[in-house]
Image 1 (cartoon, helix red, strand yellow):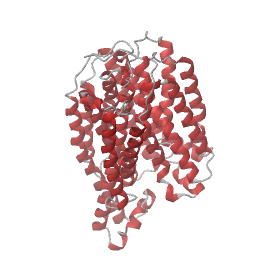
Image 2: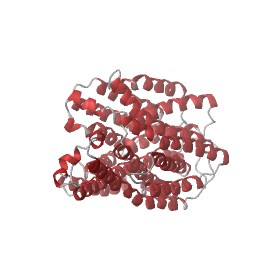
Image 3: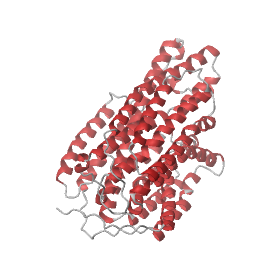
Image 4: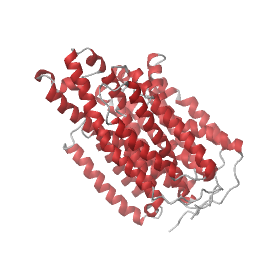
Length: 511
């Protein structure tokens, strides 16, 4: 069997060239991150213009699904054929999807554009991390990892705000058009200044069977976690069929990967203790992050009575905390060379914040909610980006791309699972609480589904009090169930073996 030899160690890139390449990577990462959130505030207008309310879920799902499926593929191809041209190609695909979305005259075309964007966006997410490993020694990589983590924090707030600005101003299509100049900048910087390590010429063997089975497994998993309990009941034939498809395709994928010459997801990775522990903790971090942040804006609107824009601003403490903790922890790693303790503390801080959030009531002052959210942001900012550094420092350079993509892939799966499970349990609890507390004529599912913050504000005092309390009591106790899982991630990370961070690019991990 032909195996790819590791890239030869290269001389350190000049500081100026690294900064220019990194600027392009930040732009690319920002593009991929923004497009996960930028349409959240524009969807009502888009649905009205394109007359496609029944397909609204696919505007987000198409992007998430496509980007998740291709993550391991980009990681493996980057290791096989090099990352520079692949990165530029991914940006080009993303820009093509932006053009399709920008000219869309129907929901079908818009969704197709979002899917094409996702095919490129998945590459931007994983290749940006892998390229950093190509040009920056692990010993210096902490500060860059911190900034990349901060990009996600900024985009989580900037996305909805930009979407609202474009919708109220020049039009929602500019959420697509803005990607063209930004993508062009990223392409120019990568083409002009990216000098990847020299790799031996080998005949690449593409694991088509593995890619196909992984795509089926990932697609089925994302769809059943997205649709389960919302679009379809958990016991419906559609969801049960998707769960069966996930299990069967995963089993077949493992069998195929065992025999593949160049597996898209090498099973040997799972014999690497640090990879397994860091990736497991990343999956849990995804559950905690999206299980909470996906529903806290709704909680803030319904319980405190603020508008959508105000609720988004109230999430800034969490975002700012992620930004500061991510950059700060990255700087500490770079200066000290030690990284093990930071994500351990971060996961326990996350668990503490989830416990505190589970004790919120309808009467809790808003500033206390923001304080708890900031605490959670601090914990996640200390954890998530350092986990990728652990993975990269623990795997040979020849497979650093596939290891990075696998870590990102499982984190995305955790995010989808966390948002879906929390959402399903929340809706079930809300329906049950309202059914038992509201007058009989006001408990129909249609009435519950049509509730908006404006409607709740206009309800009579008694009914408004009941609905507000129901929203709080249906959501926040779920956080108490996630808290022990976050603590478990902290315990898992205690067993990570802290290896010295590599001081050169292209070397093997320390042993």
